[in-house]
Length: 513
Image (cartoon, rainbow, N blue to C red; front, side):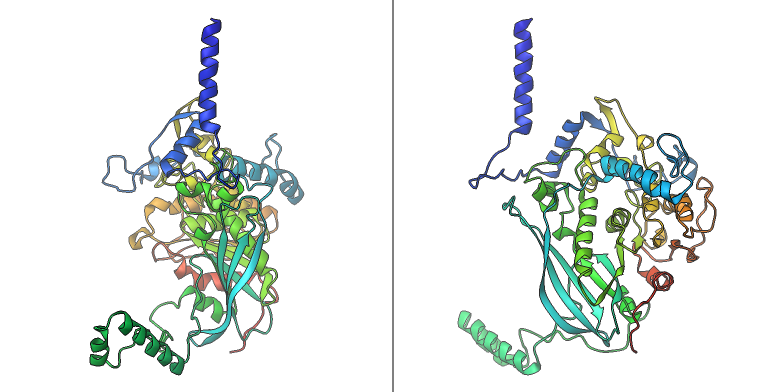
């Protein structure tokens, strides 16, 4: 008996050591763990005691395990967690009770079980301007800055995180302007180009160098004397293209500025990157714990650091900075708005599961898709529990989640929050569950109303709520909804978003024509 005990003890110790052993680099810091997404996913399952996960449904309607698109089967768990009832069963009837009691409860549940916690000690970010110049967007003069947010890595120099952001404001504004921060590639709109004479010198020198490297090119250049290796990149000023102008043009024409923040410069969009980026830097290259933050929360954290910079920019009305994103970045925009109350407003485009879509809905993308090894990195490790088929704790499903999407939207109250979708016929697939997102928006309404803001104005019966017709917006209140007739984008709603947002912005700087 004693021998068997020591054998089991030794095996347990060996297993624990294998999981917890940390290799050290030559510098004395823990070496970065290089997992594949599958290895990292398995590591998290082992931490949680999960032996098997339910497979997520397929987006291919012809596949045997295709997602459900039958509304009759879409609400297996019709009762959502109460948004205005405390854990102890008491009703929340005052704004004070919301801010001091109920909201912290909801935040805690989301942090622990869904999106993960931002660590207490995240390194500071120092913003540096790489380029600052006068540019033109169409005929509009703008001031454009290309920035980098350098994250302090003194505690773990094996990883670097440099947040890429571009800020563009109208050059002829009379004062600070509202800004919409958008998740996307950080790029200057129209980088200044050398004048014609300088470009000719550059091309002449380049041709000479090319001929030195390959003498046969001399004959090519003589045959085509007008050819230049580097063509002018100055955009032509012609008539505007048909249809709506680009989002950036619309914002600038309305007297707004915009910021482009690059998610991949904050945290990679894959499971293999979880030991790198800002999550890896804080964890010193080691795998996550179950309640550590996922990519959505990391991207939102990066947006908050971008807002830190905007608060120092005299061209920006820092009290009126919004956040925008589409698809996975729509999820991140909603998370950023929910957790950082400095964001004044949000445009949340086609965010689907993990965003505005109800987790409890059986329609399109499901919880099981976000617990798979393809999308789990967006979420906290604990979220995997809700896709568990076999585990040390038994099994869990979406109905076991302590929170749902309506409460995430409610965390944005009373600030203006615009939920945007397109239509399946144009590419905003049924997969994102427009109806389930509308139900969540309706169910968030009581909190907006409690805090003195206007909700959608359609009541709060989310179980029977039906979406308005396409292109019919509910835009009277701080909580807004509109399904446009385009695809997987929020661009067709921008011309509605801007005047809607302007209703809630006081003292907006004017721009001379």
